[in-house]
Image (cartoon, rainbow over all chains, first blue to last red; front, side, top):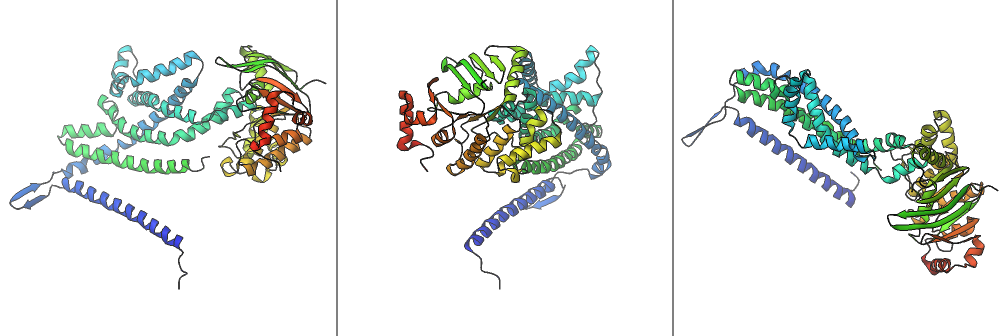
Length: 275
Length: 258
């Protein structure tokens, strides 16, 4: 015979069961919604009381034929996003430090940069690097122009994340470091920035996921053959935009799902071990 | 005898409010000096002016032959402040341990980063100082895993590891639960017995009476009275000292008679 359960065990068991039931319900609902979505694109004829409803028809042969071409843009999309987020992180950290600086030119440069970038559309900025710069003789390889445009743009927005990160480190930390004789530079690099980064890494993951999708804007210039560019190219050429865009959408969605999963784990790990 | 700390005519303004008024003070080697006074009297500001965490408005601060006058600018100012901070160890009310470093790393940080000491020697010094405060057995823990009293003892070890000429304590027990105050005061007592020069801002009258060589009373930014604890506690001359001690006697002391 099993040992009798204490009241605490029973209550805990109930809580666990309620939680499991909720998760189960959510998963089932997701599956149902996916099934409905799949059904909408299944080109099935349904006869109902004299009415005939036909769901949307997708040309499967077209999709099969063009999937390799579209899929080979995935890697380019990830590369652009990763390089851009790297550039954005560096710029954001510099801009955030600038906002805290007591040296007027540094402060001014950083606020100027953030204001200029946030005051103009990302779409315009992308075209600026691809189309306007060549007019004055600066021709960048497509990928780098895209990375520069996206990196500069995200850097300006992410500077707020890093500023919040830096100001989340208490004044006492700075004072303790200065009191043992560390210079302001050492205090920043050894004490403040490591703690600020810990705070800023999870939201930076979020920005990366947003970047995966905003990188599609670069396709409009026609110079970078990433996911979106490939989808619109084959879609327009054969007038199969529906199939092409849905294929690309699935790739984007799966990518964000995968990265969101890792992002969630990162966030959980970072939130542990805090003071 | 040469004083270790010599403060001359120190004024400090916060905006238009004058929080320190012409304070002059000397601390001699191996002295333990407690600064008492009401909250907001300027005790902590005085302490923080000594290592320039607060910038004095007027006056001179001299620590062990290194003198800095208010208003100095530029490279000379930076170097003098650095020299003074090397000569003083500071312990804060809120401990301010570095949360991303282990206990041992917290204590090693000064020797390694500031003194450019090699790792092995820094570990040795850090372990020796953790031993002094009875925290060697927790050297691999992170600050969020130890109690407030233990944090403060580590913070003391971190300051000691820089081998300062004088230790500054800014209300070291005020943020602690009552049952944790004793362990920190005991560490401070043992430092006093070892001959460490200490300047302590505190509300712990017991500690001031039993451990200090001299007690200083600050009221509204002015140094109103100072003297040996036996003399000052039994025969206070200044009316503000009398009022202050009266309030503690009437049971408002954080740690009443044992």
